[in-house]
Length: 232
Ligand SMILES: [Fe+2]
Image (cartoon, rainbow, N blue to C red; front, top):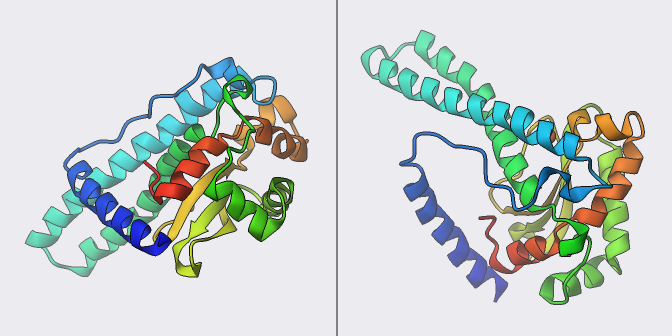
């Protein structure tokens, strides 16, 4: 049952992707809450800098890399040489880094919601049932995710995903830098483990940030992604 729904969802996403690809530039997403709405767990100052400076940098970097790739593709048509091929390979790294930064942060903002608007509250339904079946409780899933976050050496992310290659079961995936999850892994919750996400408030007490953020996690959004297999 899930597989049919999810396959259809992926097809719809592919069609949507065709449409979106006509746009030439990505932009910062609209936020659903004010910068200070996640206090005391994440300060308004952190959210403002994170969104207006860090996320904006990834938006700009991705747009630049896409433009460079487009130019190089044109050059390749006139000069199909190893020189141009090497330049294209060089742009790939920026596409991966800034593209990952752009999409990961879009997921992250949607994954957060003020406590007064349901932050930290897991709604009843198929997603909650799956968590209980696989992990016994939400607390156990949070503990597992925090363990993955604690294991990030340097900068990275942890994602709670629905794995379509594994019968649609839940899994927790840790990545480095701005690497994201793609393909059969549907991101349900994305947690930013870069220092810029917590340092102004928590300094070296990274584990406190990982403990606090669950109070403002938007489980309703995670359940929506779980049910639909779509992230947009
Ligand atoms: Fe970040």
